[in-house]
Length: 55
Image (tube, rainbow, N blue to C red; front, side, top):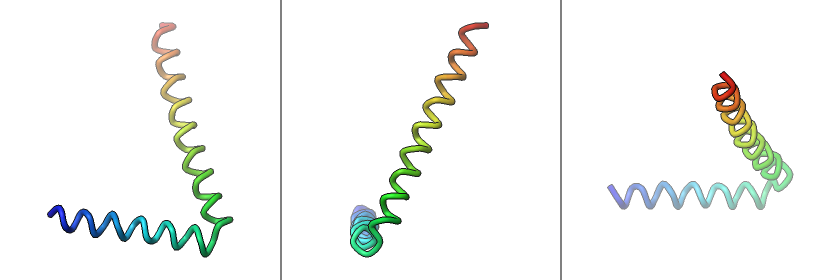
């Protein structure tokens, strides 16, 4: 099972590098979108706890 996991991780990294080299603008947009999604989720969790604490 470890071998399969290593192969899959290697393929994902190879695809990411290939995508970065062949389509750098799209890769940058994908990273910006992912960061925006994480930031939005963090803001939503913070809002939830703020609302919960205020009663």
